[in-house]
Length: 332
Image (cartoon, rainbow, N blue to C red):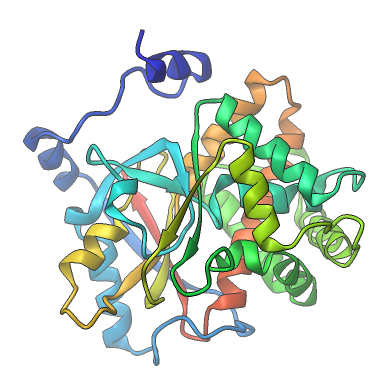
Protein backbone atom coordinates (compact mmCIF):
# COMPACT_ATOMS: atom_id res chain seq x y z
CA UNK A 1 0.00 0.00 0.00
CA UNK A 2 1.20 3.51 -0.78
CA UNK A 3 2.48 5.24 2.41
CA UNK A 4 0.04 8.09 2.01
CA UNK A 5 -2.88 5.69 1.59
CA UNK A 6 -1.86 4.15 4.92
CA UNK A 7 -1.78 7.54 6.60
CA UNK A 8 -5.07 8.54 5.06
CA UNK A 9 -6.70 5.34 6.26
CA UNK A 10 -5.43 5.90 9.80
CA UNK A 11 -6.54 9.52 10.00
CA UNK A 12 -9.63 9.24 7.79
CA UNK A 13 -8.69 12.37 5.87
CA UNK A 14 -8.07 11.33 2.29
CA UNK A 15 -8.48 8.05 0.45
CA UNK A 16 -6.03 8.45 -2.40
CA UNK A 17 -2.66 9.98 -3.07
CA UNK A 18 -2.91 13.36 -4.73
CA UNK A 19 -1.87 13.55 -8.36
CA UNK A 20 -1.41 16.57 -10.66
CA UNK A 21 -4.72 18.23 -11.41
CA UNK A 22 -6.37 17.19 -14.64
CA UNK A 23 -8.13 19.58 -17.00
CA UNK A 24 -11.43 18.29 -15.62
CA UNK A 25 -10.41 19.09 -12.04
CA UNK A 26 -9.30 22.57 -13.05
CA UNK A 27 -12.64 23.08 -14.74
CA UNK A 28 -14.40 21.92 -11.56
CA UNK A 29 -12.51 24.52 -9.53
CA UNK A 30 -13.60 27.22 -11.96
CA UNK A 31 -17.17 26.14 -11.32
CA UNK A 32 -16.90 26.50 -7.54
CA UNK A 33 -18.43 29.32 -5.54
CA UNK A 34 -15.42 31.43 -4.53
CA UNK A 35 -16.04 34.33 -2.17
CA UNK A 36 -13.61 36.75 -0.51
CA UNK A 37 -14.31 39.14 2.34
CA UNK A 38 -11.71 41.61 3.56
CA UNK A 39 -11.52 41.92 7.33
CA UNK A 40 -9.41 44.44 9.22
CA UNK A 41 -6.94 43.17 11.81
CA UNK A 42 -7.53 46.08 14.16
CA UNK A 43 -5.81 49.36 14.90
CA UNK A 44 -2.73 48.10 16.73
CA UNK A 45 -0.65 46.37 14.06
CA UNK A 46 3.00 46.91 14.91
CA UNK A 47 5.02 45.94 11.84
CA UNK A 48 5.90 47.11 8.35
CA UNK A 49 4.54 44.48 5.94
CA UNK A 50 1.51 45.43 3.86
CA UNK A 51 0.36 47.92 1.27
CA UNK A 52 1.45 51.52 1.64
CA UNK A 53 -2.19 52.61 1.64
CA UNK A 54 -5.69 51.23 1.81
CA UNK A 55 -8.04 52.47 -0.88
CA UNK A 56 -11.09 51.23 -2.71
CA UNK A 57 -8.77 50.32 -5.56
CA UNK A 58 -6.25 48.34 -3.49
CA UNK A 59 -9.00 46.42 -1.71
CA UNK A 60 -10.73 45.64 -5.01
CA UNK A 61 -7.43 44.36 -6.41
CA UNK A 62 -6.89 42.06 -3.42
CA UNK A 63 -10.42 40.70 -3.71
CA UNK A 64 -9.93 40.04 -7.43
CA UNK A 65 -6.57 38.34 -6.85
CA UNK A 66 -7.71 36.01 -4.09
CA UNK A 67 -11.00 35.07 -5.76
CA UNK A 68 -9.31 34.23 -9.08
CA UNK A 69 -9.93 30.48 -9.66
CA UNK A 70 -6.57 30.25 -11.38
CA UNK A 71 -4.94 30.37 -7.93
CA UNK A 72 -7.40 28.15 -6.07
CA UNK A 73 -5.91 24.67 -5.58
CA UNK A 74 -6.37 21.62 -3.36
CA UNK A 75 -4.65 21.89 0.01
CA UNK A 76 -1.98 19.29 0.79
CA UNK A 77 -2.58 18.40 4.43
CA UNK A 78 0.48 16.15 4.43
CA UNK A 79 2.97 18.98 3.92
CA UNK A 80 3.03 21.79 6.49
CA UNK A 81 4.83 25.05 5.75
CA UNK A 82 4.88 28.60 7.04
CA UNK A 83 2.41 31.27 5.92
CA UNK A 84 5.30 33.06 4.18
CA UNK A 85 4.38 34.50 0.79
CA UNK A 86 7.69 33.49 -0.75
CA UNK A 87 7.41 29.68 -0.73
CA UNK A 88 9.56 27.86 -3.28
CA UNK A 89 7.87 25.94 -6.08
CA UNK A 90 9.50 22.73 -4.84
CA UNK A 91 7.22 22.87 -1.80
CA UNK A 92 4.00 22.58 -3.81
CA UNK A 93 4.19 19.70 -6.27
CA UNK A 94 1.32 17.71 -7.81
CA UNK A 95 -0.94 20.70 -8.33
CA UNK A 96 -1.51 21.00 -4.58
CA UNK A 97 -0.37 23.64 -2.13
CA UNK A 98 0.97 22.99 1.37
CA UNK A 99 -1.10 23.47 4.47
CA UNK A 100 0.16 26.69 6.01
CA UNK A 101 0.34 28.03 9.55
CA UNK A 102 2.64 30.62 11.08
CA UNK A 103 6.06 28.97 11.17
CA UNK A 104 4.44 25.64 10.11
CA UNK A 105 2.37 23.34 12.30
CA UNK A 106 5.30 22.84 14.69
CA UNK A 107 5.85 26.51 15.51
CA UNK A 108 2.13 27.29 15.75
CA UNK A 109 1.31 24.29 17.92
CA UNK A 110 4.36 24.82 20.12
CA UNK A 111 3.31 28.42 20.71
CA UNK A 112 -0.21 27.23 21.45
CA UNK A 113 1.06 24.65 23.93
CA UNK A 114 2.67 27.49 25.87
CA UNK A 115 -0.80 29.06 26.03
CA UNK A 116 -2.85 25.99 26.93
CA UNK A 117 -0.41 23.47 28.46
CA UNK A 118 0.55 22.80 32.05
CA UNK A 119 3.51 25.21 32.03
CA UNK A 120 5.74 22.37 33.20
CA UNK A 121 7.55 21.86 29.89
CA UNK A 122 10.19 24.09 28.34
CA UNK A 123 9.90 25.20 24.70
CA UNK A 124 12.73 22.89 23.65
CA UNK A 125 10.79 19.84 24.82
CA UNK A 126 7.51 21.07 23.37
CA UNK A 127 9.06 21.67 19.93
CA UNK A 128 10.64 18.21 19.91
CA UNK A 129 7.36 16.56 20.90
CA UNK A 130 5.21 18.49 18.43
CA UNK A 131 7.61 17.73 15.59
CA UNK A 132 7.81 14.02 16.40
CA UNK A 133 4.03 13.79 16.67
CA UNK A 134 3.39 15.52 13.35
CA UNK A 135 6.01 13.43 11.57
CA UNK A 136 4.67 10.21 13.10
CA UNK A 137 1.23 11.15 11.77
CA UNK A 138 2.70 11.32 8.27
CA UNK A 139 3.03 15.09 7.94
CA UNK A 140 6.06 16.47 6.11
CA UNK A 141 7.03 19.41 8.29
CA UNK A 142 8.96 22.26 6.68
CA UNK A 143 10.54 25.01 8.78
CA UNK A 144 12.42 27.85 7.19
CA UNK A 145 14.83 30.71 7.37
CA UNK A 146 15.86 33.01 4.56
CA UNK A 147 18.95 34.04 2.64
CA UNK A 148 19.14 37.34 4.49
CA UNK A 149 18.73 36.34 8.16
CA UNK A 150 19.43 32.63 8.09
CA UNK A 151 17.55 30.76 10.81
CA UNK A 152 16.12 34.06 12.06
CA UNK A 153 14.33 34.48 8.73
CA UNK A 154 11.01 33.08 9.93
CA UNK A 155 9.25 35.81 11.89
CA UNK A 156 6.86 33.37 13.58
CA UNK A 157 9.79 31.53 15.12
CA UNK A 158 12.06 34.56 15.61
CA UNK A 159 9.38 36.58 17.43
CA UNK A 160 7.47 33.76 19.12
CA UNK A 161 7.81 35.10 22.65
CA UNK A 162 7.33 38.73 21.54
CA UNK A 163 4.07 37.78 19.79
CA UNK A 164 2.76 36.08 22.93
CA UNK A 165 3.44 39.21 24.97
CA UNK A 166 2.01 41.45 22.24
CA UNK A 167 -1.20 39.42 22.25
CA UNK A 168 -1.71 40.06 25.94
CA UNK A 169 -1.16 43.79 25.43
CA UNK A 170 -3.97 43.75 22.83
CA UNK A 171 -5.94 40.85 24.25
CA UNK A 172 -9.48 42.09 23.60
CA UNK A 173 -8.73 42.85 19.95
CA UNK A 174 -6.96 39.52 19.38
CA UNK A 175 -9.64 37.51 21.19
CA UNK A 176 -12.36 39.09 19.07
CA UNK A 177 -10.56 38.08 15.89
CA UNK A 178 -10.00 34.56 17.23
CA UNK A 179 -13.69 34.13 17.98
CA UNK A 180 -14.60 35.28 14.47
CA UNK A 181 -12.06 32.95 12.86
CA UNK A 182 -13.23 30.02 14.96
CA UNK A 183 -16.75 30.42 13.65
CA UNK A 184 -15.60 30.80 10.06
CA UNK A 185 -13.29 27.77 10.16
CA UNK A 186 -15.69 25.25 11.66
CA UNK A 187 -14.85 25.41 15.36
CA UNK A 188 -18.04 25.80 17.39
CA UNK A 189 -16.68 27.13 20.68
CA UNK A 190 -20.01 26.74 22.49
CA UNK A 191 -20.01 23.02 21.69
CA UNK A 192 -17.02 22.68 24.02
CA UNK A 193 -18.21 25.16 26.62
CA UNK A 194 -15.67 27.77 25.53
CA UNK A 195 -16.11 31.53 25.25
CA UNK A 196 -14.15 34.75 24.97
CA UNK A 197 -13.05 34.54 28.61
CA UNK A 198 -11.30 31.25 27.78
CA UNK A 199 -9.51 32.86 24.84
CA UNK A 200 -8.40 35.69 27.12
CA UNK A 201 -7.06 33.19 29.65
CA UNK A 202 -5.18 31.39 26.89
CA UNK A 203 -3.62 34.67 25.76
CA UNK A 204 -2.71 35.61 29.34
CA UNK A 205 -1.00 32.27 30.00
CA UNK A 206 0.99 32.62 26.78
CA UNK A 207 2.40 35.96 27.88
CA UNK A 208 3.38 34.55 31.27
CA UNK A 209 5.18 31.66 29.60
CA UNK A 210 6.96 34.00 27.20
CA UNK A 211 8.50 35.96 30.07
CA UNK A 212 9.66 32.86 31.94
CA UNK A 213 13.27 32.04 31.04
CA UNK A 214 12.89 28.51 32.36
CA UNK A 215 10.16 27.89 29.78
CA UNK A 216 11.70 29.83 26.88
CA UNK A 217 14.93 27.91 27.22
CA UNK A 218 16.20 28.11 23.62
CA UNK A 219 16.71 30.92 21.13
CA UNK A 220 15.00 30.85 17.69
CA UNK A 221 17.87 29.22 15.74
CA UNK A 222 18.18 26.54 18.42
CA UNK A 223 14.44 25.98 18.25
CA UNK A 224 14.72 25.47 14.48
CA UNK A 225 17.55 22.99 15.00
CA UNK A 226 15.43 21.01 17.45
CA UNK A 227 12.62 20.73 14.90
CA UNK A 228 15.08 19.49 12.26
CA UNK A 229 16.66 17.01 14.67
CA UNK A 230 13.22 15.54 15.24
CA UNK A 231 12.21 15.13 11.62
CA UNK A 232 11.45 18.54 10.11
CA UNK A 233 12.98 19.76 6.85
CA UNK A 234 14.77 23.11 6.80
CA UNK A 235 14.76 25.43 3.76
CA UNK A 236 16.02 28.96 3.22
CA UNK A 237 13.69 31.19 1.23
CA UNK A 238 15.14 33.75 -1.17
CA UNK A 239 12.65 36.58 -1.14
CA UNK A 240 11.84 40.07 0.08
CA UNK A 241 8.58 40.39 1.98
CA UNK A 242 5.92 42.13 -0.10
CA UNK A 243 2.71 40.57 1.19
CA UNK A 244 -0.45 42.56 0.50
CA UNK A 245 -2.87 40.65 2.74
CA UNK A 246 -3.31 37.47 4.78
CA UNK A 247 -5.40 34.93 2.88
CA UNK A 248 -7.35 32.89 5.42
CA UNK A 249 -8.88 29.81 3.82
CA UNK A 250 -12.12 28.70 5.45
CA UNK A 251 -12.37 25.74 3.08
CA UNK A 252 -11.25 22.34 4.33
CA UNK A 253 -10.23 21.28 0.83
CA UNK A 254 -8.86 24.31 -1.01
CA UNK A 255 -6.34 27.06 -0.53
CA UNK A 256 -4.64 29.92 -2.41
CA UNK A 257 -1.50 29.19 -4.42
CA UNK A 258 0.67 32.13 -3.44
CA UNK A 259 3.73 30.83 -5.27
CA UNK A 260 2.03 30.77 -8.67
CA UNK A 261 0.49 34.15 -7.99
CA UNK A 262 3.87 35.76 -7.28
CA UNK A 263 5.51 34.02 -10.22
CA UNK A 264 2.89 35.27 -12.64
CA UNK A 265 3.09 38.82 -11.28
CA UNK A 266 6.89 39.06 -11.29
CA UNK A 267 8.00 42.02 -13.39
CA UNK A 268 11.66 41.18 -12.92
CA UNK A 269 12.44 43.63 -10.14
CA UNK A 270 13.02 40.80 -7.67
CA UNK A 271 10.13 41.94 -5.50
CA UNK A 272 6.88 40.44 -6.83
CA UNK A 273 3.64 40.90 -4.88
CA UNK A 274 2.86 38.17 -2.35
CA UNK A 275 0.19 36.96 0.03
CA UNK A 276 0.50 35.32 3.41
CA UNK A 277 -1.70 32.20 3.40
CA UNK A 278 -3.26 30.43 6.39
CA UNK A 279 -4.94 27.08 5.69
CA UNK A 280 -7.15 27.45 8.72
CA UNK A 281 -10.21 25.26 8.16
CA UNK A 282 -8.19 22.29 6.90
CA UNK A 283 -5.97 22.58 9.97
CA UNK A 284 -8.99 22.65 12.31
CA UNK A 285 -10.45 19.53 10.74
CA UNK A 286 -7.12 17.70 10.79
CA UNK A 287 -6.39 18.72 14.39
CA UNK A 288 -9.60 17.16 15.67
CA UNK A 289 -9.10 13.98 13.67
CA UNK A 290 -5.49 13.65 14.82
CA UNK A 291 -6.52 14.36 18.38
CA UNK A 292 -9.24 11.73 18.25
CA UNK A 293 -6.79 9.15 16.94
CA UNK A 294 -4.43 9.94 19.82
CA UNK A 295 -7.17 9.79 22.45
CA UNK A 296 -7.08 13.52 23.20
CA UNK A 297 -10.21 15.02 24.75
CA UNK A 298 -12.01 17.13 22.14
CA UNK A 299 -12.17 20.16 24.45
CA UNK A 300 -8.39 20.04 24.85
CA UNK A 301 -8.04 19.94 21.06
CA UNK A 302 -10.40 22.91 20.79
CA UNK A 303 -8.23 24.88 23.21
CA UNK A 304 -5.08 23.95 21.27
CA UNK A 305 -6.73 25.14 18.06
CA UNK A 306 -7.78 28.42 19.67
CA UNK A 307 -4.18 28.93 20.78
CA UNK A 308 -2.99 28.31 17.23
CA UNK A 309 -5.49 30.88 15.98
CA UNK A 310 -4.37 33.42 18.59
CA UNK A 311 -0.74 32.92 17.63
CA UNK A 312 -1.46 33.28 13.91
CA UNK A 313 -3.47 36.45 14.52
CA UNK A 314 -0.68 37.78 16.70
CA UNK A 315 2.05 37.09 14.15
CA UNK A 316 0.08 38.87 11.42
CA UNK A 317 -0.54 41.88 13.64
CA UNK A 318 3.00 41.98 15.02
CA UNK A 319 4.72 42.02 11.60
CA UNK A 320 1.95 43.69 9.57
CA UNK A 321 1.37 47.41 9.12
CA UNK A 322 -1.92 49.24 9.59
CA UNK A 323 -3.01 48.37 6.04
CA UNK A 324 -2.56 44.60 6.32
CA UNK A 325 -5.96 42.91 6.27
CA UNK A 326 -7.28 39.37 6.24
CA UNK A 327 -8.75 38.19 2.95
CA UNK A 328 -11.16 35.51 4.18
CA UNK A 329 -11.47 32.96 1.39
CA UNK A 330 -14.54 30.72 1.09
CA UNK A 331 -14.62 27.98 -1.55
CA UNK A 332 -17.74 25.83 -1.89
